[in-house]
Image (cartoon, rainbow, N blue to C red; front, side, top):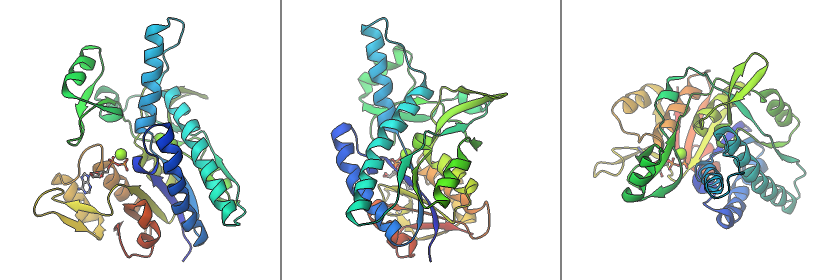
Length: 310
Ligand code: ADP
Ligand code: MG
C-alpha cells in the first residue's frame, strides 16, 4: 500500500556540526529514497536544535566582538537553519535518487508557521537549543541572561519559548509539490515562527517543536501517516528503569494515560507522543509511527517501531 507520508527527521539524522551533517545526510537520504522506491509520497521535515543554537551563538559572539554585526532574531536564525540544512539534505537526496535512476525533483521550501502572540509558552521558555554545557558553564550563562535547563540527563542547554503551531503559511505550495510527484523539504526546525498582523507576518522569538509542526503539516496536507524518526526504535514506558517496556501498538487512550503518568521526557519523547496522538486522532485511519531512521520501511509494514492509532 502506497502512503502519503510526512517524515520528520530527528537530530541523529543530521548529526552535529558541518562535517558530521554532510556525512549524516547521506545515510538519511538512502533511508528516505528507500521509502520513495517503495512507492510512497514523502514530504520531509526536520529538527534544527544544534544548528539553530550554533547559528545563534555564532552571531552573538560576533556581535560582542564587532559592534556593527547585528544580533539575529530567533526567527532569522531558524530561516538560516532551514537554508543550511535543506541545502545539504536536498543535495544528498538528489544524488541518491540519480544514483538509483529515479527522476524526481527535490527542493527545500522556506516555511513559515503561524503562532499565537499570546501563547502562554512565550512566558515560560521550555525548548532546548544548541550545544550542551556543564553545570558551571550553565550558571555563568544564566548570569548573562540566558534560560538554561538540565536536558534529560545529558547536560545543560539553553531554552527558548516553544509556542504551538496554528497554521502553515506555505501549505498550498507543499501540497502542490507533493501532488506533482516532487520531494519537498519543509517546516525545517518546526518552521519560522511568525505572528499574523493583518497581511503582515512578524517573526517571533521562538522555536516551534518540529514534531508538533510536522503533525500540523501532516493534518493539513491530508497525509496517511506521520513518521517521527529518532534515536530509539520504539517508545518505552518506565524508560531506563528495570521494568522498562517497549511499546509496539499504542492506542490514543493508552498514550494519553502514559503521558499523564509521566513516562515521556519533556523536550524529547513527550512532544513526539503528543504530536503522534494529535495526528492520529485528527481523522479516522490516520496513523503515527515513531522509530529509527534505518527501520522506517519495516515500521510502515508494521514489523517494528511504535504505532499510535485509534
Ligand atoms: P530527536 O532529535 O529525534 O527529536 P530527542 O533526543 O529529542 O530526539 O528525543 C529522543 C530521545 O528521547 C531518545 O533518544 C530517548 O533517549 C529519549 N526518551 C525519553 N523518554 C523516552 C521513552 N519513554 N521512550 C523512549 N525514548 C525516550
Ligand atoms: Mg527532539
